[in-house]
Length: 279
Image (cartoon, rainbow, N blue to C red; front, side):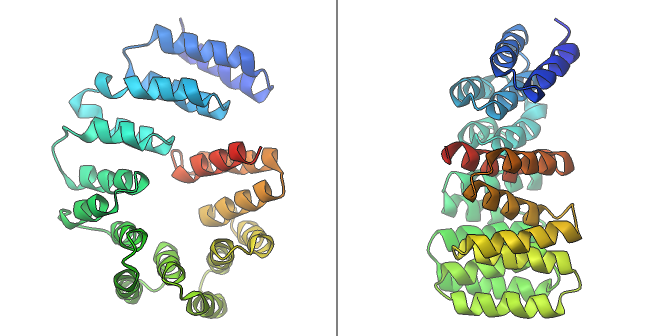
């Protein structure tokens, strides 16, 4: 079997809506390359796209035992990105710790709702980044240590006041702590003084979304994407708002656009899962 040719045929069939044929081709490809974890990973991803969750999960379960040591980080990232953090954790369970491995474990543990373990991985990092610290703060907040999370987020914001991810972290920590008015005031002030209008609009859309104001969130997300078509946060919130309006196909198109700009971005799986659950 010519793998590349088959993949092109599968993509064509998916694009044309011929899901039964695509499904059969994907499963045959997985069978032909059953010892290649990355082909299996590709097949699992394609099965997620055509919403065959059971077959995707069946493939994901066999991948960890087929990964060589040198490929563990890449395989774990791939599994997590398509919504299989438990399998990703299994891939890294015997990996030698390094900052890259610990960083991935942080995300995996967060997705598994193992918040203490996520924070513990952060503590072992030799050179944590701003994004690492933001993930750690999310873990602290999700673990219900709200006052500590807000304090940590305030410190991170003072360190990087113009970073969108840091602003999102601060806003989320305030909201989770029941301090929504403060979060709202922060995003409004940011809207007035931000150097990036699309980022500011995206932050407002995020805040409105987590506060349950979905219509307004969608409007600001649209503005963010119009101002910057590569604004991932704006695109994600826009997709969520489209799902709320039952515009499932449009939301999937946005998810595909995110994947083109940032392959493997977990937002893609979150959007597709929301699409599936909305039916």
